[in-house]
Amino acid sequence: MIKQVKAPPENHLPQCLYLALDSEIKRSHELRLKVTAHFHEEIIDEGGWLGTVAVSLKGGDLLLDLDGIEFLQHSKYGAFSLKVAKRTSRSIGGVRKRQSDHVSKPSASLNVSAVPKFEMATAEELKTSSSDEDTEQQSDEATYDSWQLHALGGPKPGWRFSLKTGESFLEGSLMGEELCVCRLSGQTGQIEAKFTVHPRFIRMNVLTGPFAAKGLYDLTDPKKTKLFNLLLWKRVVQPHFQPHLSRAAISYE
Figure 1 (cartoon, rainbow, N blue to C red):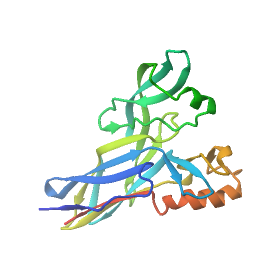
Figure 2 (cartoon, rainbow, N blue to C red; figure 1 turned 90 degrees about the vertical axis):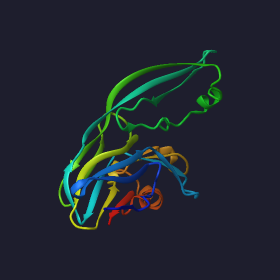
Figure 3 (cartoon, one colour; figure 1 turned 180 degrees about the vertical axis):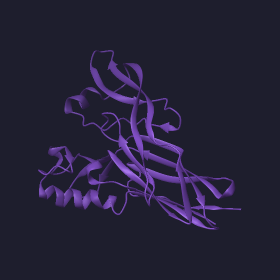
Figure 4 (cartoon, rainbow, N blue to C red; figure 1 turned 120 degrees about the horizontal axis):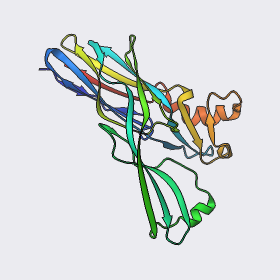
């Protein structure tokens, strides 16, 4: 009988991306690989004078390294539909509160985090929104495709995650979603999944420190300052993405 042994997942920024693998073993050594991936925004604070930065993803590649495993087919790719509730809060006293996106009732296995997107509050907003006691709320639901998977072939099969709508970053979860079917070639084997991100798919929102006034950064912008590139990017953010952002593996014996 085939036994699977799951290595502890390696997630450098577990709020930005938490990746885990599982599989279902069928007859004829067939393996149905299931992926759990949670995407959100994560605040990096190294405790130094460079300050803090909120990091999120606009895309990335999940690639498989197969040892003693034959890849048979992709099980799923394309767009994922979500139900999103737009909720507005306003106080009875007439002070208008900020509007936020609240995600509810995910379709199928896709579960989107209920934590609101990060937004910087102004001093006036902080002054007028200290309490939610006397507020009224109104919700409207709409269904839209938030992000999608593109199947990748070649020696390292996998998937490219990308935004489909005008959302700012990947946010939500795959919960044990079957993404491919493989077969164990012999008595032992291993599936290793690595999530890598090109700098153009990394979204950074500088919150505090000497670069905070500049706000969002596009790492592909040729006009970015050398000082920013050498300090905040290379010292604080880039090390979390090398050689990969997340890694998970399953061995079979």
